[in-house]
Image 1 (spheres, rainbow, N blue to C red):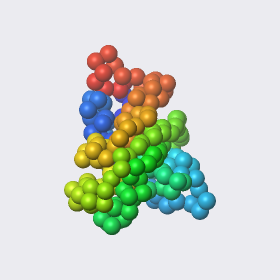
Image 2 (cartoon, rainbow, N blue to C red):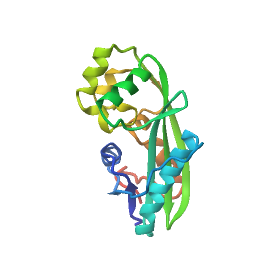
Image 3 (spheres, rainbow, N blue to C red):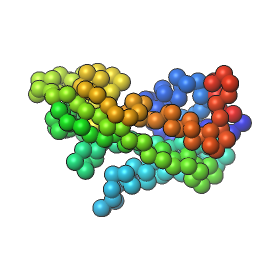
Image 4 (spheres, rainbow, N blue to C red):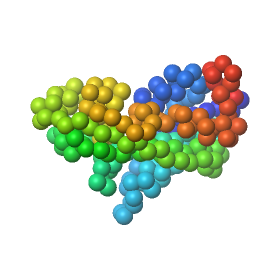
Length: 197
């Protein structure tokens, strides 16, 4: 059986695959995520996902490596992880009462070669928030390690009015699309839906 590796330090992504019962190993990638001048958000996210997977594949060439990168985009601006509470408040103030796009790029690599790559997009609409509500949410500490300064699977669910697209993509990994791509590569879920074979 081919070893499956998730090139990610994200506990959200690890939890999603664990809940499916998939047999995988999570490995931190040391790929340097540096944006290029003039690079579009989608191109940057795709390059980061491939870079993460390729770096881990270089260390584990026999494994099938999944790399992913999730970004929040509004008005063409990429909102990454806030540096502090002040920046988190700024991001949420920008998102409140409006629609933004959550984009996750996924790359599947083996022996240093990309076997599959795709991007999933979900539109998320925030309800209108007061300054007190924003400060109250940021005070929970939940926003500081999340792209766009919120977690839809946590207290952040109270900020979201509606979404159009894959919910799990907003969490950090579009597992339904990922399973389809793995199936195309011959790594199908078994009858018990317990592991990849």
